[in-house]
Length: 109
Image 1 (cartoon, rainbow, N blue to C red):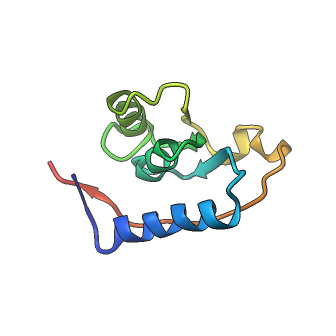
Image 2 (cartoon, rainbow, N blue to C red; image 1 turned 120 degrees about the vertical axis):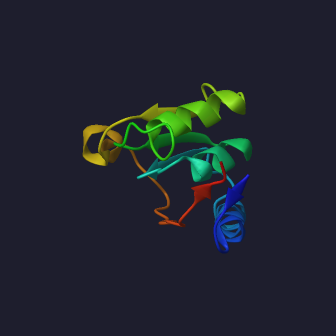
């Protein structure tokens, strides 16, 4: 479904790191979510995900995340905000971890 050099492997490593070092983590903020593959992966692992992406595109932006959220039946597990991170109010919450994963992911069409 997705192509990209080492993308899936790197994403799975990130999920494993969170599970190992912070197993009690229940909510993850994915800021600059792109097409949402990381948000979906985290949600499938049981996390509630705040997916923040200002681009409205249905290919690489918030539209794509909404589509994947529906396809994987993750409504309520993935909260999509089409805005910049500063506009979310998430900075007022406490977060245990900050992880930056920015793989380049291209959907095969």
